[in-house]
Length: 197
Image 1: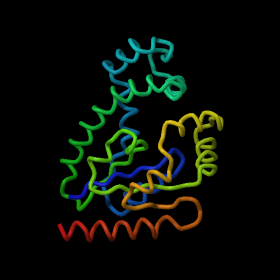
Image 2: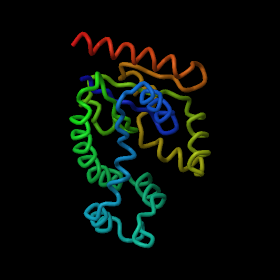
Image 3: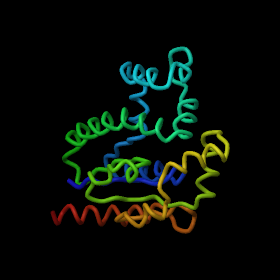
């Protein structure tokens, strides 16, 4: 089984691309969605209160917008949050991989695959590339946030160009090419690679 990482900056269209792979029957682990689930764990919340205080909570529930504003404005705060969540996500992914071990290849979708060093766990990496202006507009429309908020998040990510250089495959989601034919070609090549192994 081949382990594939799927990444791209915020607003690049990772979720759209991962849905195409899922339609092809490929198991996809959504690391960012799984990470959010861990924020509801009591031990994680206790650690967050100790580090950041109770201001990030409203009615005993984490206010994700407040937490995002805090960590994307403070590198140390972001590092602390990642040090708390990443080991839990990694363990969850390892269990999920065993469950899906019969598939020719599996994908983990994660925004900061390179930045976290997780890319080293994968046999192949796909980056979804998009123009920054287009990505910013997508996130503003999707999340109802300001351009400044989107750029703050982007500042904590490597450039799309750097990720593309280090990737085995790139899916361009900037309107220059159709997504489905690009995904089908990558799928064909990964299935072929699995047969050779």
